[in-house]
Image: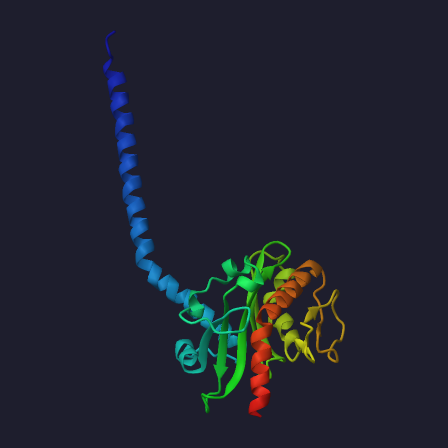
Length: 251
């Protein structure tokens, strides 16, 4: 059967398109891979800067002109502890994947601790910042809780989320909600009471050291926050109680 010249031109045209598309895909893929690898150090640095900023924001008001890395280096000491409250040597806090540790039993977790020291007297401990992780209504929630020198009273919190409902559960990221935790206590004597977000909103719990006014329409997110805090306060309990004893002996 004789091949028509038109059919040959069509096949040649289709082959050209296929080869051109393949070459374009390879070239673009290579450029994207190169760009990704080139930008990774910058991306990692930005992630690390955000982590430090979130930790510092629980204990101090940061200004735009503040050198986050400098303040962090001068005032924060990083530790990693186990459930028993003892320090784990050879492990850095920045290397611990909190979301991966959250999936483990509390007894098996590596737990970062960020000790915030006094500017005038670096030997003096002002605050301790503890990472927390949990699950809200739709997805993961996480953050940091700063305790005052007594390792009981909350100095500040910084919460974030992956997929809570805008205007409802997503309000855990707002200063309005986070400020409600300030001054609350996690211990009731020797008993770990934790801090509990209440159902509903607009109630006055200023005289109750363990209750926080809730969020209208976000009961399940509030429960997620409660579970997260109780889980991680329990995980850190041995560390906190050991250091409370050491603190009382030093007074």
